Length: 206
Image (cartoon, rainbow, N blue to C red; front, side, top):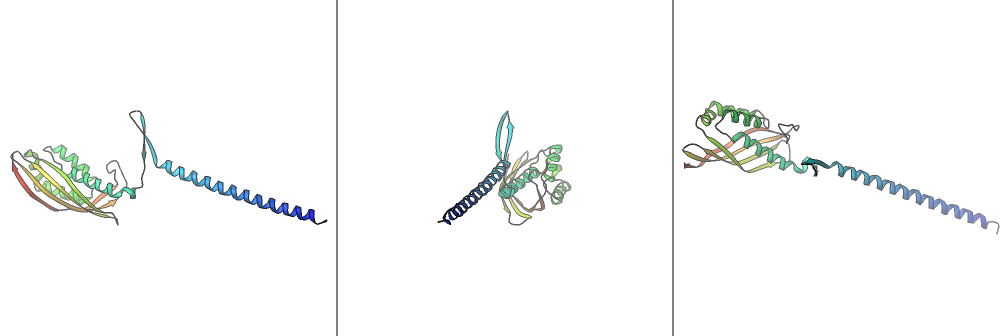
């Protein structure tokens, strides 16, 4: 009978130790869960940006560039072609738009522009009061491996005083990722750009 109290104390001690271990384990699990939730919330908050517009706060979400790279690439290519091929009979206007286009490309675009100048095409646009507009129909981009190759299909509309010419335009090149800047917001540079096709589809009298 004298060993019974001792056994009761040992059992109570083991029970208390087990209980404390469970409490400590529970605290560790709760702490780890709290840390995980805090990290997740911080990551979600970093993806949110609030912009003031007309005195109102608008919430916008940031996304990873990889998730949107095809859209950005196509918009960059479209923007470049609109700047390069949209011409009005004004030397300053042409110079301004070409300058913007050259920020988006390498020397291959500058070479094509120089060829247009040397051939007298730009001078003819100015002296002949010619307006040229472009409609980009589609852009195909392979974003598997950088630099990304692309092909652009577009339609040119050339308006002269006596006629209106519709041309089919096909170009190709590749995109290299660079730092985003004010002049190049998408952070791409068009390289090895060349015209594959530029032929008349129809000519209409005015």
